[in-house]
Length: 131
Image (cartoon, rainbow, N blue to C red):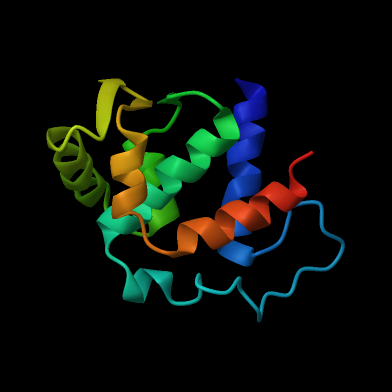
């Protein structure tokens, strides 16, 4: 569980700052291409899909240790908003909320269709820093 938490933390840094947590120099004024203004240009559903896909890439499992509270903080929205979007994704058969603090990816292909275009850029950037 600890490596997943560390990985999620490094993923959060890459998504927010565009650099690895271990980088010696972080350019705060230059976020990754496609991420700048993501909250303004993409809806919560697309951003949540992106978070779920990137976390699954990192964790290597379909069951993700993510609470709605954590996701709301990462997305910059209220927890109730994450709850509503998660219910929608579950109704569409993309995810299943298994128990508190766990979300299971059921249909990755559907999530990939719903995600914003920033996913590929972030996925490739994060892959550069994961050993």
